[in-house]
Image: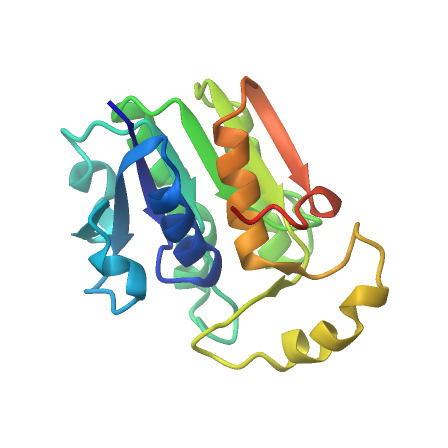
Amino acid sequence: MGKIALVAGSTGLVGGHLVRQLCSHSSYDKVIALCRSKPTADWANDKKVSVMIIDFDQLEKELADHKIDEVYCALGTTAKKTPSQSMYQKIDMEYPINLAKAGLAASASFYGLVSAIGAKEGSMSKYSHYKGAVENFLKQSNYQHIAIAQPSLLLGNRDEFRLGESLLSVVTPLMPKAIRSVQGADVAGALIIAANNTSTGVEILANKNLHGKSL
């Protein structure tokens, strides 16, 4: 019997790659994609995918009675995309934490988080603070294995145009790997590789070690 993986943020850049790569991996029989509305992505028709349209404010209730082996969280937004500070906090901090609680209740032993380089609770940057708060929560949780990816700027095909990413894609080959922009597919691959190694405890996947990991 193969594993069951759950992906939150499946309609985003890294989340979409997570679903695709999990579906192509022989260790998985089922991939649950949590969505707010019906997805139009190519992966939605894969025979391994089970789409769950849920209310993220009711995560624990929505996932009650489900059996899950691994949880992947690629939830995230930007201040420009989500000007409401309370909603921004929910998406970047509250939902990932609630997802972790729901995953444990569903018997998950692994949690893979897409965080960010420079994540630190207490940071003056709300973005870094929220990411850091989620990391700290996970480090104190009861998951057998936690993998935290800390990518720099993410590259890949998005539904929206981001000028900063477009400009950096030109100069990124000249930058050190520690801070170099990284493909979203590589971040997804690194988390799945981590989930299938023999590690336990908290595993930090630094930006310099994410490159070239797409499956």
